Amino acid sequence: MKTITLRPIEIERDFGQLAELFTREQNEPTTEPALREDYETHKERIIRLMAAEDEAGELLGFNWGTRSRFDAGEAYFYVIVKPEHRRQGAGSSLYEDFLQTAREAGVKKLQVSVRDNSPDSRSFADRRGFIERGHSLAMELNLDDFDDQPYDAVIERLKGEGFRFTTMEELGDTIEARQRLYALNDTAASETPGSEGTHPWLSFEDFQRTVCETNWYKPDGQFVVIDNASGEWAAMSAITRF
Image 1 (cartoon, helix red, strand yellow):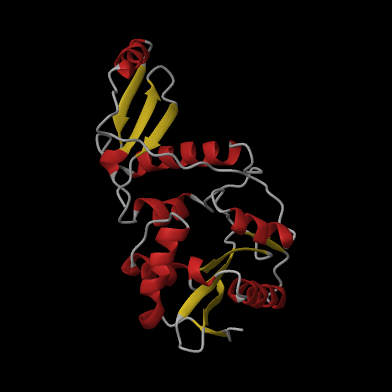
Image 2: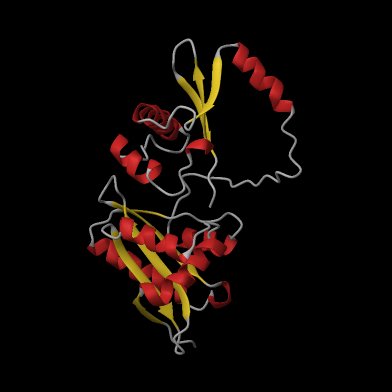
């Protein structure tokens, strides 16, 4: 039987492989520099970050557990193992290691995301008592084949009814505009079914730091619809390049 050893993650040695695993296994596109930046941003809340390796020193997988910004008694985590090394004990070892650390840190509630096209991952979570609280879908659109002309009439009708279609760039990306964007995002997120009323940001300042001041925030890709009569921000959509 394969001997599995756990050790602390080493940034220089491991983050390249971790970025590849996040991208491939979690469908969360990232790069080593981006992962390093994320680590630096959240490292004060990271309670566990361990690698599993075999006798030859090959990285088999890792765990990554982070305490919630909103509740010190909650944490979310990843346990990701390379497909060719699954069902050999690495995932169980990584999970038990994180679970023990979470308990010692006073964490009472754990959250994990499982891809619905990975029945083995779902089974892994089910066997450990996790309960599904929400289901998100990722969808792709082939822009070469997409015909957006049918939407032109809808947009023109809404404009005729007094709605303005614009972008954060056209609005100057001002503090006032960002405050309105924050209010719309925060309200919509907290009222989404399954969100349990949770707000994704602690404050407007938090929204500024974690959204508007990031390298993926593009004012020309932040589209908003404003009701000219009331001034209310009615809708928004965002295009982000990864």
